[in-house]
Length: 306
Image (cartoon, rainbow, N blue to C red; front, side, top):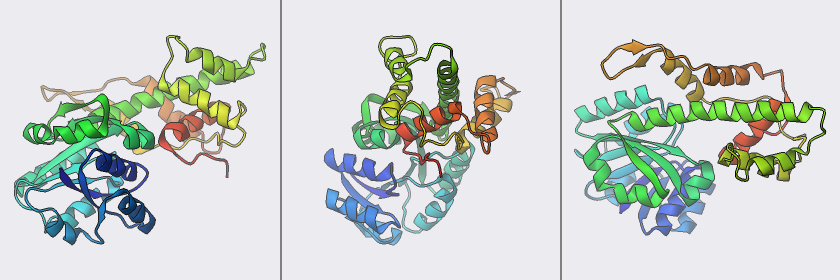
């Protein structure tokens, strides 16, 4: 397939390289000249502005945007003049599902199709095969399924439902992720302070070898200990938070059910993990260092002490 791609950040660039390796043609753009040059070397065709998509993508267009959620509306506005009825825009970033539903409805009125994909796996997943949760028109999912298959780890993609469903499932995924990371951080702080003088590196290894809590997160902590040492001296104990944890807590308090009712669903673990991150600003801890180290391992987030 030949697709347009907007956004060559730490996720987008890796995804473009994977698309090219799978035999797809990519026309890409990004304000970062270095990223564009790297994509060009990999085989992508680079354009300096979105207007060029009009001639570079003949026929029905499929354009993937991988930009921060607060930029999506601007990109859509810039694309509006070059798209034709039936063309598809795919938002692969972490957008709020309510905004995705709004955008989908607005574009539908113009004869355009808006789809959403929640992408998990961080930069490594984007480069080597991610987990993808896809929402939008079912016929477009079927038409472009090979694209999703090529971008995913084996069996790592699925159709979630109407526009907004993909971002909704990814939002809740990130809320769950908050709670899991928090539990690991808290547990390892208790281990660190215990009377036994435990080797935390060895604990992380054994936890990640056949135990009930064996997981990618536990494996990433093991890797962080290998790279940073068990004291995590260079890692900040203040933990940043993205919008998705907050959005999950807000959604739980006002969850619209299939029948249209609104339910308040208690999520004390997720809410507590979000509050911990907020409270950690100016109040660092070893729990925070563990959580920060995990964020760096899977997401490439900057977590070094300033």
